[in-house]
Length: 402
Image (cartoon, rainbow, N blue to C red; front, side, top):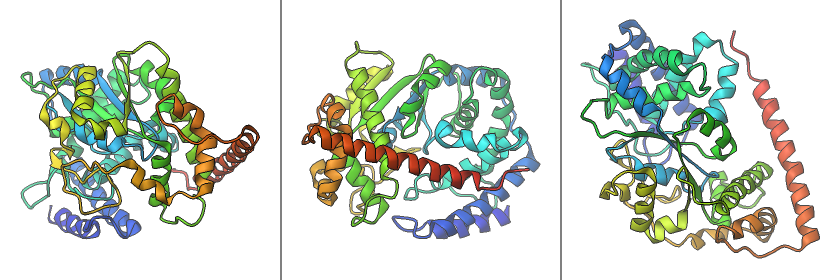
């Protein structure tokens, strides 16, 4: 245990500050710590689960809420607003099952899946999004560690979920993670008001058919935001505002796909399973938007839904680029303030790709002449193909697990 406490302290030192300065060093420290935690948990063995909590847990497991939208659209804020409601158990980090983990698991032996995901999620519980708050389950001490408890809970839930759901639900490992996290936070008491679990993954709109097939009772919340604000935030996140984004083609294609999905669904009859949520509406009319979300989810519109938290801990404002906002409160600055980082080139390319579908969602962008629009779209698609090939080459260059 003392080794874990020491490794945890070294990891914590890499996490201090509003942003993690050295991600490689932080990852190395986190990896050493998570492996040590997992080893201790393996020696202790899985937790013992009661029959009544097992049945209660699987009842909750079939009622997920999936929050998604293009990167930088406000999905983290929506997740954090849902976090502390007693009817919801909200994973504090992105699930990324279809967008990331599925590919990694295919390269691993099935016997290695549990350890791989367990260590990954230990690090995510300590450092969910590379900024405060950290250590969402608390800190370890000589007397015990909540992260060992999480690992042992995951070891207990994993074989049960695999046995019950593995034949028909490809994302069953994510369910096991959700049940282990809930076990360590809300629990599965018979008297609990828990109804659903929540996870958010940007760009999951690509997998809605799979999600709804595997979880017929799922609720889908699609977050959209003004395209210029999304792209401006992407540029700020990239850190180099004087050159085109390195993955410009991929980003613009993801944006078009996301807005197209929302636009297509906007012309259908209202669905009790799908809710489009505009980021601007959430900021301008928080109470009205939250009441709408609560009604959609069938939960009480409690005041905690206006306070962003992660496992009940106040989170920073809904801006990744300011540290002067009070944690646990919304930043309601106009989204137009972010557009200044966009060049004329940026605006043209964004408009060419999404102006038509964004207009159906209430976002008016300057139109681009037809021929010029066609040319820009062809260039963007070519760049997207190149980005995909480059990403695939990088992936397949990684060593395969033996």
